[in-house]
Length: 87
Image 1 (spheres, rainbow, N blue to C red):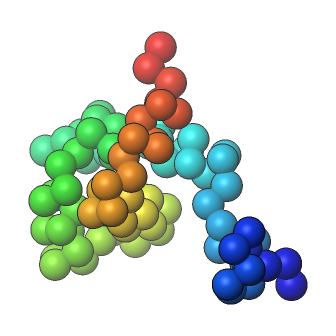
Image 2: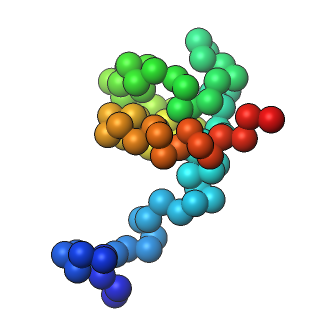
């Protein structure tokens, strides 16, 4: 198994965020509720925290929301925002 550049732990290609997934995540819009039609990255962190306490939706949307919550709490929004296609 390949190792990370710092050789501290093995890389797991199945768990790496790939560029295509990040582009999809950046351009994913909320399909319902208070923030309907807004990009997930534009939704405030507190909304994701509220969903985590109640329960994220099942399926793709819930997974995207969980990922976006992690991005937001780790201050990584600047990595996602440039990938938005705002045409």
